[in-house]
Image (tube, rainbow, N blue to C red; front, side, top):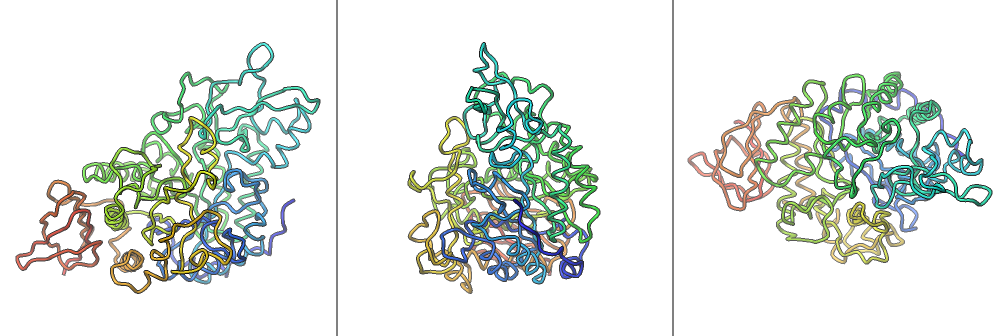
Length: 560
C-alpha cells in the first residue's frame, strides 16, 4: 500500500530555485546513491535523513542539483531498481515525510532534486505482477507484462532467444496456481524485475499518474532508468546470436532503442510542462551512436540524455576531441545541451579506470596505478567541467575515491555477480559508502558500520581529511565549481574553438577562457593563454609566455 503524501509543495517552496530559466543547460548535477551516502540511524544503510543532513555540504561544494538513485519500496533484489510501490519510500530509507523534508530543505538551499524513475520493469513483488501470477493464464494483469507460452512440445523452451543483461535467458517460466509449469515472462535484467508491456494503455496511464505524484511533492525532475528499453519490437523476434550483452551499444536491438519509445516521452513531456519551476527529464539511454541519443532530447521529448560515449572514451586527446565534436554536432540540431559524465553507480570509478591501461571497459577488477589514476581523474574533471553543457558528478569522486576492487565474494550484492555470461557483476566496488571523517566505525558514514566494507585507508580520503587542504581533490572540485559559476563562458553555449596544440594535448577557447589538457605521458610546452585560473597539477609559466604542462594535467586560463 502506498504511503500518504504530505501536502503538495506550494509554489513558494520552489522560489529559491526557480530564479533562472533553463538552469539545466549548464547545470552541475550530483548523483547521490542513498544507501551509500549517509546513515542517520546507525543501521549500516544510508537513508533520506542522512542525505538531508548532508545537503549543506552539497550546497557548499557548488552543485546545482542532486539526483537521488531509487529509494522506493522494494525487495532490493537490484538495489532498489526493482520497485514494488512507486508512491512509497522503502522503510530502510525512511518514509514520505522524510522525502518531503529533504525536498523542502534542498529548495531552501537553492538545490534542485531529481529522482530516479524505473519504467522499464517493476519488482516481482509489485501488486500487478503478484495478481498476474495468482490469477493465472488469461488474467488481464498478465497483459501489462510480457507473458508468453513457451516453445517446444510442452512449452519447455523460452519464447525467444533474448538474453538477460545480467546473464542467462531473459525469460523465466512460472508455476501456475494449479502447480503445473506454465507461461514465461520477460525480464531483461534479473528475474525479480519483470518488464512492463508498454503497448498496454494501463501502463502509460499508471506512469503519468506516478509523475504527477512526485511533481506534486515538489521534485524538479526525473532521471529515467533504461529509457531506451520500454518498447520492444513487434512480435518479440529472435535476435539470432549469443553473448548478446557484448552487442549492446553497437546496434539497435529488438528490445532496446526502438522508435516507439519516443511516443511515451512526448506524452510525458505534456505532463511535465503543466508544472511550474522549469522541471526536467534526463534519459539513461545506451544507444549505438550519439546521433541516436539525440533523438531522445528533441524539443517535445526529454531535456537531457547521459553521454555514455564520453564516459567510455579512453584518456587520449584525439579520441576525446572526436567525442566532444560528435556530441556537440549531434545535440545542436535538436537544441539540447550536451552532457558529460565520468562515473556513476554502474561503472568503475574513473580514478580507477584511468589507473589501468585503455581497453578494459567500464568495469575493471584491478586497482592499477593509483597515483596515475588520481592524476588523470583530476585532469579529466577539469576538462569535463570546461565543456559546454551540463556535467554529472558521482558521489565521492570529489574525494578522488578509487573503486574498491578487493571486496570479498561473500559481501558482494550486485545481482549480475551471481549470474553467468552477463555484466561483469563488479558494480559493488563503486557503491562502497563514502568517508566523511578520519576515524569511526564507518568513517562518519554512520554509527553502525556500513553495508559494504570500507577499505582501511578510507579515512585519509575523507571530507574531514581533505577540507581546507590546499591541492586536495575536494578543494580542487570546490574551486572548479566556484570558478565555473563565476565565468560566463564555462558551461554555456554549444561550441568550442579548438586551438593548435602539441600531440597528446587538447586546447580550446571559449570567449576569454582557454582550457589546456595534456593526456600524454610526458610534459608538454604550450602557450600561456593569460592568467592561470585553476590547474589540476603544478604548472610552470615562463617569462617568455610559455608554460610547462606536466603529463595528465589540465589548466584553466583567462585572458588578462
